[in-house]
Image 1 (cartoon, rainbow, N blue to C red):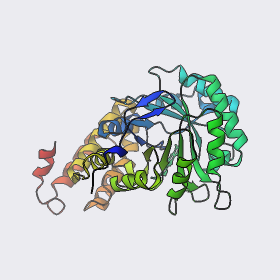
Image 2 (image 1 turned 135 degrees about the vertical axis):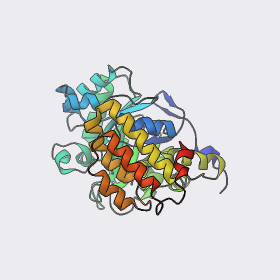
Image 3 (image 1 turned 180 degrees about the horizontal axis):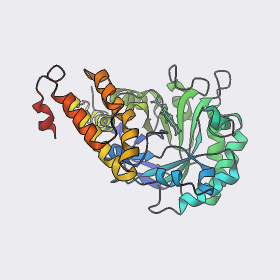
Image 4 (image 1 turned 135 degrees about the horizontal axis):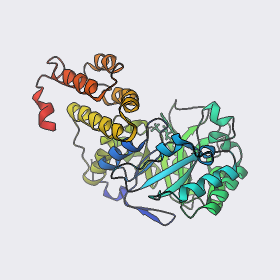
Length: 344
Ligand SMILES: Cc1cc2nc3c(=O)[nH]c(=O)nc-3n(C[C@H](O)[C@H](O)[C@H](O)COP(=O)(O)O)c2cc1C
């Protein structure tokens, strides 16, 4: 493939100069400090917290505080909030502004399809009122001096595609970046993202546009950048169990080729992830949460079903060490187990 060097570039988000355009998307249940730290190490230029309830900030919720923990080595960090109330969003923005170290930006979630969130007027419910999107962003801008960004979907359903209107309202209120997940709320995470919406928004939006939806490989990321002209991409499901995707995309954009990673590297990264997570959350919680991550790290590898069956009972770091070592030294899985030691 030809060199696509110019597709990797810095991006200015409301005065914050980020030195690249490959971002980790907000991912509830996944994009915590440990995961973001690994993604930053592999080349995520900015990573988002998972969505946090604006009301949680007001109540000074301890779970919210944990989710705001900064990842080791993480330079650029976005905090995403969800709310249906300009008043609460403004209060949350004010609190976020005062955090140390300061986040790079604050993002408003206008895409979460979960009924519990939508019922409160937050997430993708906001796609039904451009006026409220304007009021929310304006309130957040007035309450903080950090750049405010917005993540939207194409529309509520196929008969109400309104990403242009939603983005317009956000930009008029001062949003510094729009990320479009090119699916409707009705699609949830199914069907195909319609990248034509991203291309169209890019032509009609005064601030940088990032694309989200169906980026599962470095080639997908390059294709989205090429086909839509968007300013940057957000990796979501494609990064879960696979932070390598950042390194691979950068390599593809800069050299035209990709050096694939090995199965052993994947497992070693899973173990590094576990240790980072233990440092942040303590062993019991980290070990419980890492089961889903390990399922993703081993997805598609030979013998992964047996590995997953063992990991559901793992509750200490030693359990994980034993299970991964047994897995990697099983001759029927990897004929030359010493490869694990070479990759360490
Ligand atoms: C497990 C999971 C959690 C997510 N959490 C959030 C979130 O907290 N905030 C948000 O704006 N989007 C969230 N999303 C949506 C993603 O950021 C992304 O826009 C979407 O998955 C489309 O990208 P993909 O098709 O490449 O996965 C989530 C998606 C998944 C699968």
